[in-house]
Amino acid sequence: MPGRKEITLIAISLLFAAVVAEIGLRIAGIAFPIFHQMEPLRGWAPLPGVSGMWRTEGEAHVSINREGFRDRDHEIVKPQGTFRIAILGDSMTEGLAVPVSTTFWSVLEKDLETCEALNGRKVEVLNYGVSGYGPAQERLTLRNNALKYKPDLVLLALFTGNDILNSERALDGHKDRVYYTLDQGVLTLDDSNTQAFRFKWKRFWRTLRNAIINTSNLFQVIREGTTRLRNLMRANDSGDSKAVFAPTGREYEVFRAPKTPEWQKGWATTEALVTAIHKDSVSSGAEFLLAILPGPVQVYPDAALRQNFAMSLNVNDLDYADRRLTAFAASAEIPALALKEPLRHFADETGTFLHGFPNSVLGIGHWNVEGHRVAGETLARKICGNSP
Image (cartoon, rainbow, N blue to C red):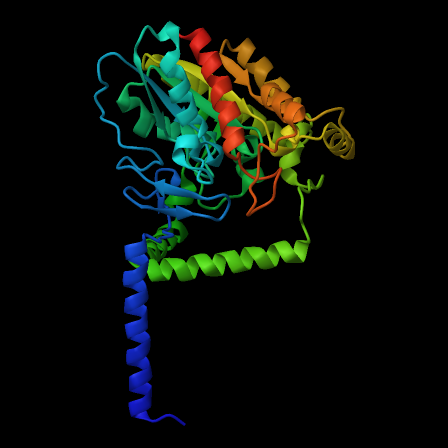
């Protein structure tokens, strides 16, 4: 049994090794920080000024700007001769899995540089996409963050894969999210989750934990390794080597006309929030575009798989959400673009997976570089054609 001297020597050796490892990781620039924090306005938001690697899905260096979003810093006062676009969305928009230069909003900015309809104005795209956000949080982000930058165009990237579900508490059930309730056509903010003692205590603990982990690159590497091992074990347990779409998933209810009161409320609240975001944008002097983003199975490069999945859901196709949102936007005179058809056409013509990564599963998850590219180019064509 080791004595006190041996234990002290072991402790000093471990401490020395930890210090050396910390210094080495910092010199090498290896960091896997926690990028998001809890906050009472929306439930959570990115941590301003944090930067490091993201490799949970895909691989990219991620930097959070001083406003608290994945983007470069922007001056509040818009430079003369600039056409500003504010992008609202969730994880599909934040795009943590790909380099920032390949996100659809970066592709959009680059492609619009040659748009003749903009009469030589410099294009500046501001990204406000945050993982996990739904339309309620996106409206609060528009009001709290985006409008003060005086955008010329607000683009709401609505992801049918979960945004309708996220709009209704009874469907979503997220204990940290804020919601809007809809009563006789009136939207009312429900922030009871973030005002509860449970949330405040959890926020205190998470803030302390994040501060400790983000202070040490070694702690970040240990946390990243633990997360990867856990994910690998889950993947091995499931035996998934290719995309699997389970018809029992609640998110796939969006492919059917709503039958339950909860889904009917989810749809009604989503449409009311889109209307409100449109109104907020136009009232501030900005144009507006609703971009309807399809789910992974809708653009999976295998028509037979898509049809078989539709049959397993007892529907004719997987396009109910896109049709409904397109029709709703037309009736409300809200400019809209459904990305399903151009993305599906590209996937079918080339056999390219637009979702997924080699270190996750191809065909599911978030857009990869090709998915972002096709989406950005499609949006650029739409905006350029509609630009004043």
